[in-house]
Image 1 (tube, helix red, strand yellow):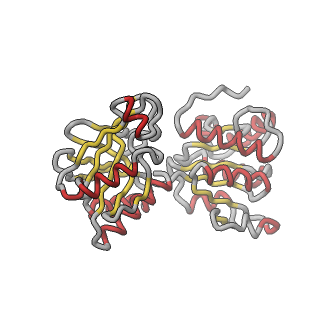
Image 2 (cartoon, rainbow, N blue to C red):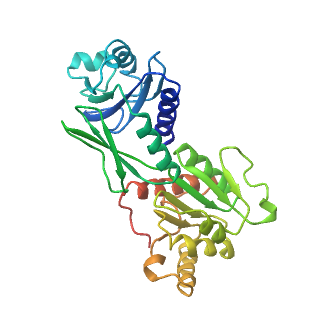
Image 3 (cartoon, rainbow, N blue to C red):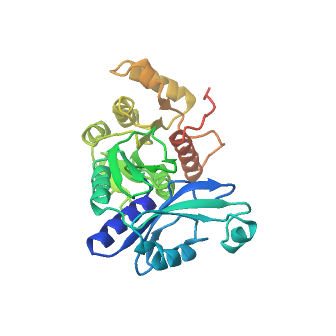
Length: 319
């Protein structure tokens, strides 16, 4: 779940707890060029306050009006379609040929939303099935392969923890990598035991932990929503972190270094309790090969590779 979707959930829960009427709108189908993907959602309070987005601002004003004047008085979900005709696409500011269909729930269940929030805080993946006819929801355990689904009978949505990035080392490259990771909606944790980096990144949007990387990774649950990037260029620190990261369920593990140093690192890791299969999970040299030279350019290449792996994009093999 990205930070925007998390804010939608937080706001909907808070408003319902305060006794306000709330509608949840979810993008369930798109045709042509649509500004927001399926699964995108927003919460609309009875007074017109909105958190989230289903169209990037194209249809929200009309949707708020419809929710306030029509939908909030109903007890069952309503399907709303925008951009059916060319004139409507122009009217609502949708890209040429773009059409989107929304499922608007006028009676979201507070207990269900609170249970979703509880699961996210435990870093679990929660699957919610909504009966399109009645609006009733059920929850079950999901996994990373579970996809958003919609039919005339039900909507299936997935909610999970935010994607995280553990950065080993608090140097200059780590600062730029943290900047781009935060801009890409990752929660960032920087780990560095060295006294000269004791103040860490000293910023409110990054968590800094002064400790040995391997110990910290063992203490903090590394799950399939986690990327680990070793950037100290010090084998004593990077290798210790990699030994634990490669044995974890992290979706991405990368380390700074040349091709020659990466090969030597893999040979060293094989001498410890790391299998050949686990060692081959290592992305090194870290980042896509785009000719990056400066720290900010290298940080761009790192995030590009992490995001590609996150979405299952095939990458060229590094020689």
